Image (cartoon, rainbow, N blue to C red):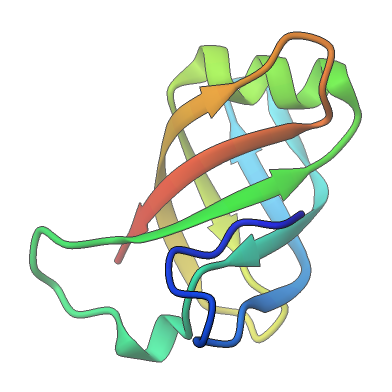
Length: 95
């Protein structure tokens, strides 16, 4: 999942729990930067989930979701983009 806004910043990857309308399951994720840098303001962190194409399409169609990271932190997601047939959906996340 190559998604980095700043190529010098290390991406944060892992496996987490994605929840949206009538779906609750595990997905792989990649975040553009460390979520500990996320404040409570309007600026979120961009990232991507990797799942089977149907799950990625349904997550994008849902629009909003929650992602629980490997360390137990939960964040709100706003789905931004998805390519039909691909197993990725891109998002921005907030606290």
